[in-house]
Length: 243
Length: 243
Image: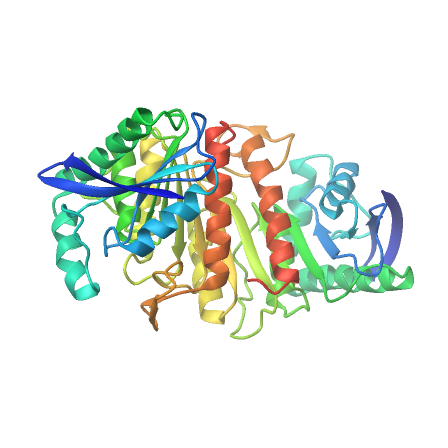
């Protein structure tokens, strides 16, 4: 895959994201906005975007913190993510800027079909892509994987254009059942098209290979494998108007 | 496919079910117990079992009412299903008898691998297969599609051997959110392996082609298509110990 660093204007900051192209990317390729977990645009985040893009896709890894800042661990990440969670308007501006950058930079390179655009996020990034969808972004689909589900700015009826898929653990302490319930009530009231797969017994970060904090954040290879399959199928269904 | 009528002892009644074999069924075939909706062992139920069995599978359509009795519509079906919902022990005996019959009749014909046995049910049948799983049946998986989720005899810790998949509409008035919540709490407490896919905005019977009662029971071709795909993948994952 080809990886390019892209500098872009991003709300109150300058973003530094990564544009990833599969070897067979062309003008019909799907465009994926990938919002990584709260560690930011790390090498792992870029690798995962490449995996999601596959042979044919084009993906952009969104920088939410500015200057491509990454966090070494939860202690560094927590205040960065919390600041944006407390400021949902700035949070939306930043993820929207990444979305616009994906569309513009792909067009500049003659790759990607803007009618086949979707967003996928993990943990904090799942919350980011849901915020983007709540804001009415022109996306066919948005997928949150163990993300935060509740927003201080709930979707208003008719606002959400994207089909939403939420993959979540039943015992996720970072976004517990009350958040799933709030999401469900919000999206039904907003008339959004949504699906939620709840994995019984799983906690946070089941798709994060490094996660190994019992009861809080635990990698689950079977759920991760199933999640990647479901994401691929959901996006394909959304692109083909089969949802 | 080959369809045979099978008479068997079934709790307090004599069951009359249907054994269905795909054209390529052999000794390694998966064994599927199919519990139809509350209309009973109808031609549609047998056709659907054949679809689930596919080329290679063996399926048995369970008779819950005895003598293969079918209901022409909801008015006839309601009292039949309600009587068994009110008597969970008899309900379990009947679905367990069908399970045993599937194993025995397949063995007699030299087809099917009992280590690859699962149960799938629709509406009332979804509740039946969950009751079978709660009772500790030797199944690799049990799948409820818009089924009833709450039992008067909740699973005790360690009882459930099957991996469970629930496919359900967020606005299903026949098994509303309180039933989903009860199921989740029950299965997490029991230590069961479970997953639930909630389809936002959908009501009851989204896999039933004839369902057309707005707000109550409505066919949804996209959800039905996705459901069959998910069932197939979940069973395959369960058979291959990939859950």
